[in-house]
Image (cartoon, rainbow, N blue to C red; front, side, top):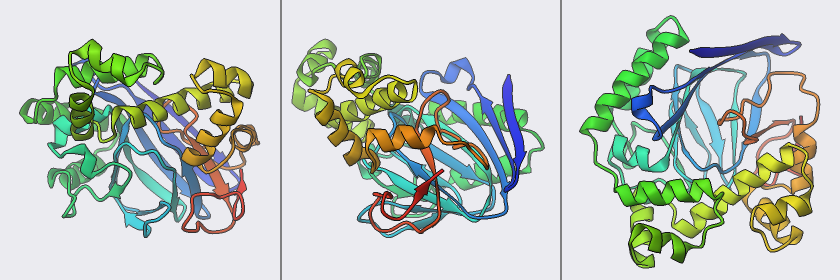
Length: 312
């Protein structure tokens, strides 16, 4: 079943199609999201770290992605591995494609690339030296030629099934450790996590770097932040959220939030509650608070938008 959300506003039209991957692909392939935007002006969006890898299979229009400390990338299809830093994405107002969310270990199996090579960066899936798989561009073209989201998601099921069966097997212990990190929202100590899967801490760290992209401690930071954003967006206070997510105190939460999103918890939650005059933010993960729409100004080399952008 595909859920389609669409609408029109003073700035143009938008459509999001949400699809669930076939059960044989779960829990590695998390979700499909079709996107079609026809806006009359450029659109900019802040993307915060999430506990997943993102593959955007673009149909034609490019996206410009800026990350602190790196030159901007302009890409049609995009792969972003696990990251602890925010990014700003911008396009000219028209965008179409399918966004696939993957458990990081599933991306390792599908593409066979050590994930530490792709962590904290954005890459074109088809361009060396960090290409994932030359088949990605062909898949994006095949998706664009299909007439409906249902058919596109069905093709993704078929292709990812073939790729996963032929791909590099992921360690079952990594999958178990990742599932436990996700289940606990990143609060389980790394030493205890290693003991539960029967590895030393060093073994766990090495396998996580290879098959997740981040070490277990960094991955836990991302998952704690993800849960904190979700609680804050649902109306919970900062002190309550800090306690629930394993932060030492509210100041610790605020410092981590600023470092990993470019804004304070108050700025983020306030912006999420502002009226939307154009298309909604289009969060990468349904039910999660992952994105903010930015208006006016241009992205600088820093992801701290508070001095250069107005949130909307």
